[in-house]
Figure 1: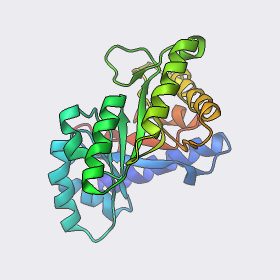
Figure 2: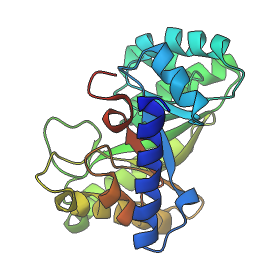
Figure 3: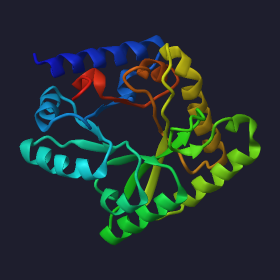
Length: 242
């Protein structure tokens, strides 16, 4: 067994244990292996170990890697774009990924939808929400939304605008927690995203929003405890440098 295969087995076991601790079915949580620093050979090792969902940060780096990997395996893989998408990269990103986790403005959504229209495609997306308030984090600014009726109302309006775009499907929300000394210190951030999703569902009942993409190598167990359906894990699988 290779180091990557062993690491994947350990991560999957930790996901299962985290689910069982809160009476969740481990099948509810998708492991997205963040392969942004991983070589094609390392990714193919993970594929051989049964991994099918991979996440990339930069469109320009991901597309040639995806093309290379697709030629090297017969397995159908699911590619996620998890990094910030610059508006000028929307043209290349649209339709190239199974799921884009990081849509953070109506303007970007409109560009993605228009590009998908030109390609005759529909793009699944998540809305990135900055619920921690960190200035270094991307996303719709939603820190303290629970006590800010106007901020929440504005977000509902923006989500409704995006939901009306014909070539996008909103599947849920994504966030990044701050770096903390202990994973449980990140739980309030994850709980806030889950509550935001539930509040959105109440306002926009036609949007089921099944997914919460939250939790990374250092805090994914805390995210699972708060309802994560997708965890984005790179370092624990591929090591610090891929």
